[in-house]
Length: 255
Image: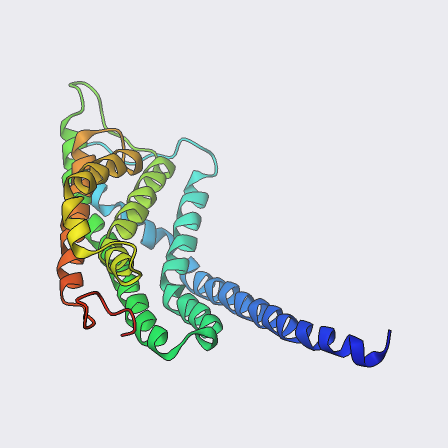
């Protein structure tokens, strides 16, 4: 086989190798960014844990306190929380690296659409976590502590508390992405505003099912997640109504 016959194959492999090298470079940057933020925050690990546990500690009965039932929990719980915090702080940079990698392959109208959706996704995820911390946690922990049987002292393990709040942080962060997901479904032509309105009863039921799966097994916390999810679904429908339409009255995907 001649060299001229091999040349096209080598040329076709070159872009793939370049993409893989760039992907490796951006993954390393992401890992390095999280590591740098983590090392910067690790000195304040206990303070970060105190801040996150404040909604529970502030309403504990007199004489009650949080406890550590495992030998390594006093170190591991703040460590894991600090690592999680470092990831959250790095999310804008992480998404920037992902955007920089995929942007060259997008059309101009896709870039115009993707950038605001990406930005709103970050803001909404943070908003969901803030909502959970300042609204849901105080209500939820007040309910749990008051529901304790007489003679039972509430003394929560710090590791169990961390697992509980991280689960709720993710649940509410993802739930607040519903408006973005709704707009994307309409833009992609998978469904329409009218179709979403018709499916509203099923969506409401689905919100409560998701709330049951993502939150602790009690009706109170399930409702605190399901109701905002439903309201955010309605916000997504409202935003979709204002999307530009083509001459046929359909949503114009080339915005």
